[in-house]
Length: 497
RNA sequence: GGCCCCGUCGUCUAGAGGCCUAGGACACGGCCCUUUCAAGGCCGCGACACGGGUUCGAAUCCCGUCGGGGUCACCA
Image 1 (cartoon, chains in turn yellow, orange):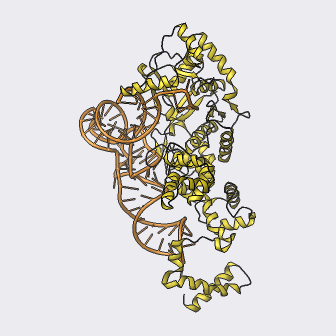
Image 2: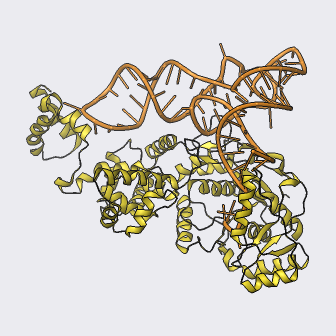
Image 3: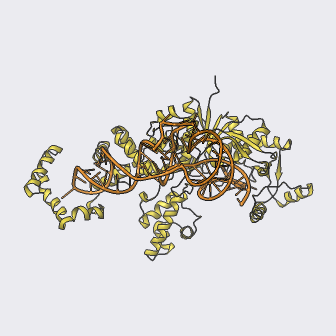
């Protein structure tokens, strides 16, 4: 009997789940489900400055929308396990496999600068410190970090995606931090301890972790832990080849905000005032591309400058949900970014993916995120989805778009709207193209292109045709399709249209 | 820059030495349908990065070049 497969997804709660994270979660989930194993969820909140409780909620919400259910009832938070980590670290120090290091971040930064100027990679060198120096640092109030004394040798491991012999030569290994100045363990340490404790058998993660693996292996060897199988997934990129991240949206909003201030001869103060945000915040954000607005701030600014949600590329799972994609479609598409069941197979249900999933089908090269294809998948899926499925999805969409006038409309009517717009691509389209039913006439927005093309064409013939059809429709008692068709046709024949 | 990973149509990929005149999907182009926007139908354009080997035979194996990406945190 083979050992059961245990996988995990271990996000850090620093914001919404993004598409790349969702794919990592999906692959681990699929692997576990395919083998009838377990898929665990753990929260890696060791970064005190960036982790938030809201993010934890957002993460759970996104994961549950996607339907990637976990097998551990109790959520593990690393921040609540300090005693466990500290005990192990104390033991490593006692065995002289780890030690306290006293450099300040500034000192390290300057060492790195020197390395960079010398055009070589920075390798940390453990200084020989006397007891006096150490007590002097202590007296200064310095907080030491703990570093793992990495045995200097070549490290190699077999990657289940990239193949055998992955790793680095001895020249690249260095002692790395396992406990930070604030007392929290680093990712490298906590991940090794927790994976071992929960008996994780397979770790599928992004390729950005490939070289980290040697640190984890060294730690496992020092602690007598078994080594799970590692598989490093190709990275998801934007169409231009850059790494896909949430900055992409912020960049676009900033660009339009700057345009807006120019066109309206406005100041950052004006923008801040109108959007109800602190002036300093907005001014800094406008000129500093390293600063980012959070989701709520972004929405406020977009309202002021008249930027529509639909021009922003979706990056976060939340974005896709808000745009009106079906979760199973997102997952199907994400699965195909770096994995293929072989042959021509593309459109798959969750059950099919579980059945067909295998590590062998995971590719090695990076994949660019192609929204057009995702849209096409969604178009297909909503065209074949049952009315019940669509209604549920539509109501979910509306719950994320509280500003839509369709909120509060009864289910029967929503179902009719969905039927009426058959052939739609995104639920957002149904919303935007049918909201004229539910808002005052003067708020109805006309598509200028359509007005030109239809109403104004042939010297306003389009508009007058509509005017003339009105009395024809008014007198119809039995408001059904056949009746409408008959009356409209008769009218058209009469006036020669 | 050091180290590491990768390299089939514009994009995602199928392809595990002869099944390949390289298949599919999305995009794109044309035609059809349609007084909006879509959806739909038919047809088409389009790739093995380059150079050397190995072999009777290479997209598939080896080497080099070039190109892309990752990493070099008290972030994960």
